[in-house]
Length: 382
Image 1: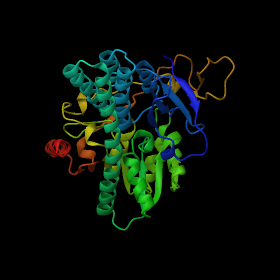
Image 2: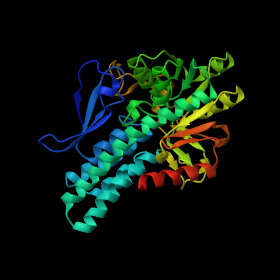
Image 3: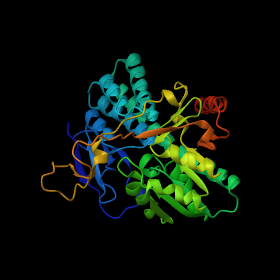
Image 4: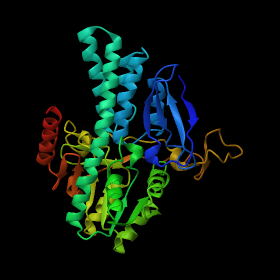
């Protein structure tokens, strides 16, 4: 069924307008998303009544960010189960909606496995649907808790590497409450620094695709009262050269077994700049982002976005004569080909540390990541 839109009211902070929530109105359960493609101009909620609607929301980047994609995927399976749709088909469709972010597949698997286990044991679809929903809700809670711990570990690392505060942090893409069940990953660390009086300046890259830094990170920073400055991605080098960056904080969509980090395109050049200028390059991500089945960076599938995101500027509220409805304003000659990867891969030797809810890995090695994941499984089991 097609998505429905509903306006959310007021000048609420991002933490008061959840990026995602499950609701059960009389007409049936739904998954409600804050449509991130409409920010910062307006806060509009997208109502998904089935898995295909959620898949479209994921592909269009209405809902995005590695941790939140995992949560959304789990709720998507639950939505199919509770409404009596094909759960196996929904799980397969959701899992393939975006190939690079491993958390999406993890969340789908978790809810799908819970559903299958109860269905096999009881033969009762209603009980199985309840198990899928419970798994999604548990993942949602765990991510919020992980966000708190990542912020604590990240702030401690900053204090170790840069004692005395006054941090000038450069961040890329969007990693706050819009991508998480809590306050995010890398942004949560910067926010913790802000709250403790240690943040001097947050440098925000515009970040393609869809200017997620300009639209979303700046939105969250402004709502949080942080001192921030927006810059074009290709201006970062001049900041490094001027000595204006103390640390780089980014998230991750997949971390390979060797420590290679797939993150929003533009992260790799920042890592190169950081290494040349002797600035820490820190990745903040939940343990679920570490994919030990992916051996190295070359094995990570990088999503390619549509070329029109580069050749056109989207202006949904400023229609242009002759342009297609919902299309953009052309900024390149008709027929121009565009190279538009959503992610790039940073090799482990350029990563100062990987911060997770279970602790920090530095230096980043295959052995250290494997030990971290093993420890995380033990904590979860216990």
